[in-house]
Length: 113
Image 1 (cartoon, rainbow, N blue to C red):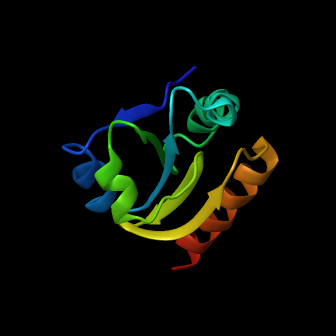
Image 2 (tube, rainbow, N blue to C red; image 1 turned 135 degrees about the horizontal axis):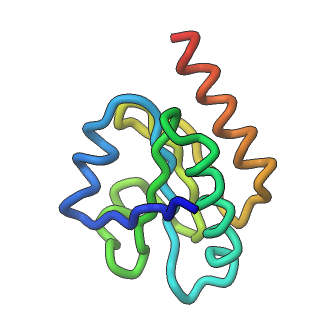
Image 3 (cartoon, rainbow, N blue to C red; image 1 turned 45 degrees about the horizontal axis):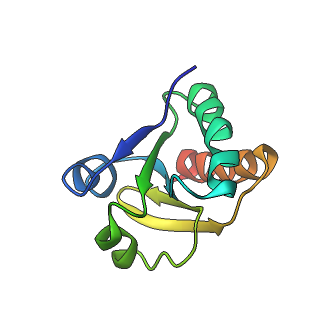
């Protein structure tokens, strides 16, 4: 199964903000129970949507400046970016079906653009 890449301050701009297409960012912490529940779901989604969307993670404890820049106040926060700009956000552990709906909605919008 494909593992979701963990980004740091140095890699976030090139992988998320300067990218074209869709990127789902999971803002998480190692000590966060709900974050641990979401992690395997994201690994599966990364594999299922390979080539359609990039899925990455940012450790909230290690990268507070990234969280501040995007107004992240709770974890897990999942933020969808299109062409480097945030376009959608959900806070809290979400079931796979809700995350699939979010992704599918943005893939459909990407196709119609």
